[in-house]
Amino acid sequence: MKKVLWIMTAALLTMTSCNSNDDGVDDGIVIPGITITGDVDCCSAEEALQVYKFLQTVKIVPELTTEVDGKYNVFAYTSTGSFHKGYNDIYFVATKKSSGNYIKYFDITSVTPLMYMVKMNMSHSTPVGSSYEVFDETRPAVKRGWVSFLMNTSDAGSWTISYTADVLDSKAGVEDAEIEVDALPDGQDWLKNFKLGDDTYFLSLVNPLDWATGTNTITAYVSKKSSPITTPYAVADETFTIEIDPRMPDMGNHTSPNNVALTKQADGSYQGSINLTMTGLWRIHLTVRDADGNVVAGGDDLSDGYSSLYWDVTL
Ligand SMILES: [Cu+2]
Image (tube, rainbow, N blue to C red; front, side, top):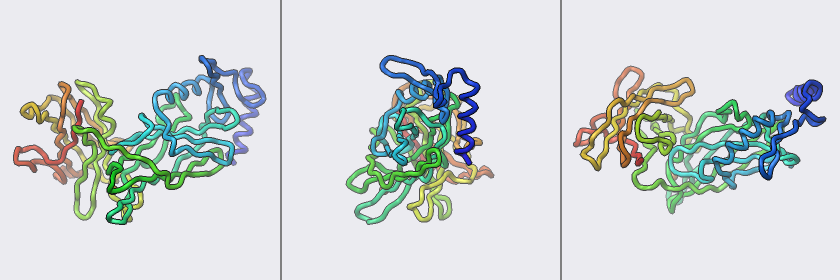
């Protein structure tokens, strides 16, 4: 059905667009060393150029590259080309092998990170985003999702990722690709958990290295540990509020004014506002409340009066 639609659209484009040749490919935009062309299965040359430009700002994760039906390539990207403990954005792009052109109509599903723990001889998964979606309409051929790794690769254990790629009705996948998850430097701790009844929840702080001194949007996800634990941990259905109390432990625990608690957004993320008045180590003490306002995690647990549940961010 999808294919029939596309053939019709291609025919229409060929008839109506003087930019298009018989393949439905328009004339293209030339930048030094490369010609960027549009494609009926993707977008205009201008949109393709936006995709190309975006991909210059991220790096391929070679372990996750795959080929679909001998016709398409699928590439995964992160900001560094590798992974680290805590939250990682992952971007996917599909291209035609024949032309290199981007493809808009593809789906990435069943993204399954697994860590094998050597001594315990068991495997566990980790928090993941619910789906891979277009995150910016000016780059319709880039899909974004995320994985938040509970642990880094070490003698204790190592990680693999599997996923399924569906490109223009052809299917393929990557199975148990071995990846390396780096530890975070000292002064950075972006993933914490708390228990509520029999359940364990994970608090993943999103990309704090994007922050600058002053007021920043603070984004996080709350995920619930799965049963069995080899199933990726989905975003929790419950609605919490995450209160933040940023302090500088190396400077007498002074705080900053005008911080706003994180509340749940329509897309399932939590967002608030954090004001970091200077560079250095900030310990963001957390108090988590349920929908009725009861404290369910954090609060005044430490002898110094600050919550023992915290993220560390060094600006
Ligand atoms: Cu582990």
